[in-house]
Image (cartoon, rainbow, N blue to C red; front, side, top):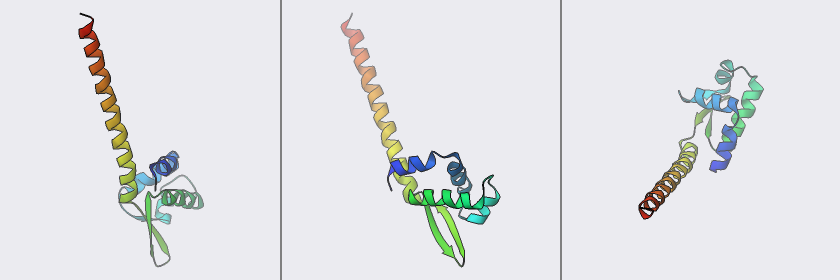
Length: 107
């Protein structure tokens, strides 16, 4: 799973809604579809995209497929976002230091 695949998968509002539903715990597709304004086949397609992106795990219980948020998939996305934020903060601090040094030099 790459963070790019996760970001692309989460670009769709229906997929973000599915992820929100799964925050409370694992669910079968039928239970997910009941609470969403899209068809069950559409929910299944969205679940496949999220699974392929590494954001969900799928287990089988009898004839049901149970979907859950994948800690590993979310961790990869979180690592990317943490690094992005850290780099942005470092760049901001560097810029502020340069501005402060430039202001001192002008005196």
